Image (cartoon, rainbow, N blue to C red; front, side):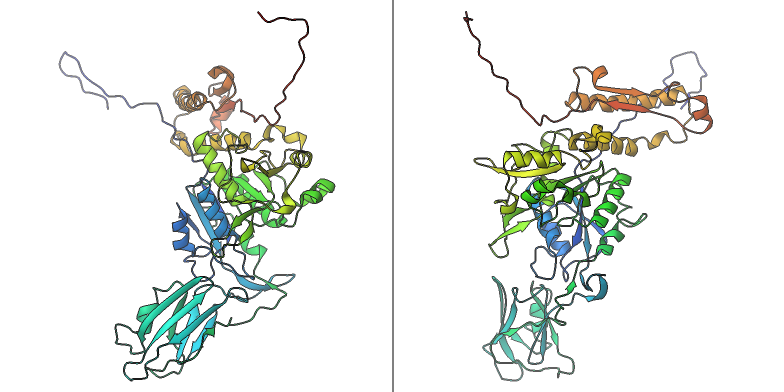
Length: 512
């Protein structure tokens, strides 16, 4: 603040700094959208931030298997963290049965139950003909009180045993006290109308029966649930910043179209899965089948599905690639930078045994997919499975050649997000040379820091980027309308897709 002078001498006045530091935006904060555990998800339809798979298990219940329920999100999130991801939001949708083809809502997905004597056990895991849960009672004591027994709950390879539980409510071994909140498989309660002390059934295992057996023509997939997530002003729209979006296993054109529009508004990038029934031969012979995939500069398509060992069963299962690829994006951003294409032999996929049989391709087939803007995932001897493509959804369109490559588009989005989040201080400042200088200085320093990290093409700053903010960019008409214009340009690094080795014979020449 100004000093007050009174005596001859030296006075110190501290001046406010006009320089503003710009903090880089994140590059791989990923949003996952889809169905999560029907009984263990704490909050449906709300973005929940997680930093590891343990967070996901706590908030969304972890992995599960059921013939009626899509479980792609759980496996995609697991793959994301295993492959290098470290920060994500998850929007879990609540599954309910819907009739085909109009997806009319029928009922919520309900938990299976087993009646044992005067007790009702309710499953905390989804059950079906291939995922059976049973409850068995043994070592029953008929002395009253207390009435005691051993309870064993079995679900696949998971077994829980509770010994000497009691039906006496005041007992420390009371069955509800011993099981509820402790078991990961069931909750237990007194059957409606049963006496307070009830009785155990002394018999073999009782299977859990689903409350309303689904009709084969029903589905839990409802495209409107996904589209609602993208509402302007909705909960996801209020998330300050995210960079990547994954909707694992979903190739519905309407959903992808809305997702891409949303990503364009939020300056984010969609990692999309090709339809699960697509084969290499089908794409090569009839590339027009890809026309169902909406086109945008803010997205890329990956093919084929991957194979992985299911930790629940030990069997090899197919999984959509998007969650794994998102992890590779994050790993590449950390190790090399957002300007490096998330593809190549260094992008070995973790926790993957290969690709599905119908997705294995020759070099020539991979070339066709590349020209069709399909980013292939390939398996090479001694290397493993790697991402082997880096083109956006608009790569075929000559009008969008500047955004042909994934790293180029993501670099632009990164710069846009960073400047958007850091230049708010300039609002309502006097629109004249001091403001222009401060803006130009701040942005120039940020771009110079990127240049020094090797983010741009060019050997010196003047070749690599441009920052302008002066009377040539902001005219008097702009000032009168309250506008200040900053022009930021950069020379992006583009991936070397084709390495050409030219060999010739040198005849009649002798090396000294």
